[in-house]
Image 1 (tube, one colour):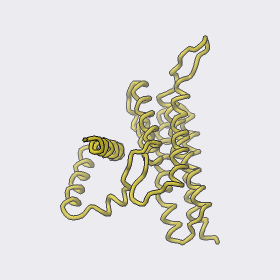
Image 2 (tube, helix red, strand yellow):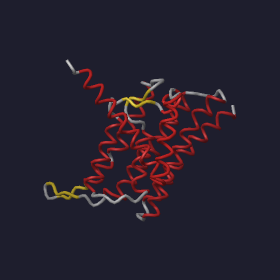
Image 3 (tube, rainbow, N blue to C red):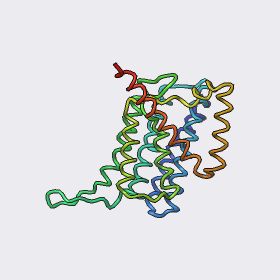
Image 4 (tube, rainbow, N blue to C red):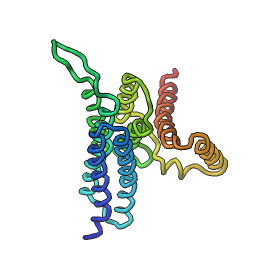
Length: 234
């Protein structure tokens, strides 16, 4: 059926944006890093659309599911890892047995490895209401936004943030699915949420995306800590 190529084209577009992001990251310029990060954001938009498109057209298939995972691994694993290496992690060298080792390259490799494992696990352990581990698109976006905004920080600090986010993908920390969260906000909760969002937009301006994704990551950690304390209270 020709209809199946509509969602599949969106998925392949996701992969294409991830590949082109690699090309711009390799330029080694701030403009290149910005475009590379923007392409990862664009890939996440296509990733959001391909599933609903397949369900709306009633053309969901195992092929589409596997293709989606492969595309996500490139766009939200390999591309953010390579972008991070070029923008922050390159030049971290240590000598072992009289041989220089590029630690930045090894650290950057954590992201595609964790993303690949996270995506494979998702295919067999899907939950209707929550994600087990930080979703790869969210992890890729938060990492891409840092060089996009040209945030200045020591290499060691970025490496620490990078490793934590990578490990969160393969963790057992639960993250509520945004659509489930939105569907369950009603009445006064919806009003409070709207007011907070408007205030964030007014005062944070172009930082709003970075702040929202940071809050999403923190929300999972806070819930995990609260649950851990409750489970070990007695």
